Amino acid sequence: MNATQTRPAARAPQPAAPSARRMTLSSIRKTLDRGPEKLFLYGIEGVGKSSFAAAAPNPVFLAAEDGIRNLVPVPESFPTPETFQDVLDAVAELETGQHSYQTLVVDTIDAVDALIRDQVCRRNGWSPEDFDAYGRGLKVTPDEHRRLIAALDRLAAIRGMNVIVLAHARTKTFKNPAGADYLRYEPNLAGEMSPALWKYWAEAVLFATHEAFVQVAKSGSEDPALKRGKGVSTGRRVLYTEWNAAYDAKNRYGLPSELPLDFAEYAAARERGHPASPDALRTEVLSLVEELRPTPETRAAIGVKLAACGESARDLARLVNLLREKVTNKGNDTGTATPAQEGA
Image (cartoon, rainbow, N blue to C red):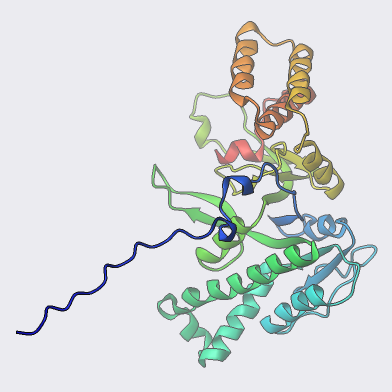
């Protein structure tokens, strides 16, 4: 008989040496640097998106459309890109070249989206009809947007440059899973995935428009929802910074829900949204409450919100901004609805 052959027992895997591990308790970060600006701004045509971005620190424009020609002064810019590769080359040049620019402005991403569409068609030998057939083109273009996003992230990480991406707005029917569908503003990008990628990438998504109100006559017994309203513009150009049924917006800076369309105002609000001391914010909350002189019920509700904020500087900053707005608007209630309220 052959002798029975035995295999040596398998050795249990050995844990990596402590020095080779990155994820240790001693490596936990208590704070993080704020990093450069990653801003996505979309809005209606002619509202002043390019002017807003031109006021950012030492900007250079990657102008895929003719939106800066009449600005005073005309901002510095790359030649108008003719292909999507031109766009990527410009970002790479800023990453590796010697320059003093602090902000890259992409004006606009929907114009870049058209260059991506052209590139996809050339690469695959497609006609415009082929691109649209069966939604095949929209399955490919998000990958190109990811390439650009990755290049912009490298630029921000390596050179510390701010990035502002501009887009036009369009109205689109929102398929509401909880009720009736309704119109809302969306970035003017084809498909669902590409706009979602840019909104996810940005630290702040801002919607820009002209401030307007709808006046509806109060006389009569008919349903107010069926009355024809009259649009009234105030002449102000505004930024909305938080989500509303009428538009997408967000921010991670503790911004007030509405700002003038002015980069200096935005930058100041961003700085206020990054306070160093929760104690100082709580003191300001109490001071604003006294200035408001609210009812006992409202005072109690503010106290509950203040307690819920705990030590979160961001939540406290949001509460401060809300109270500042109430102080500013105290006694100025006109009974009309803002665009934000109309979209709800």
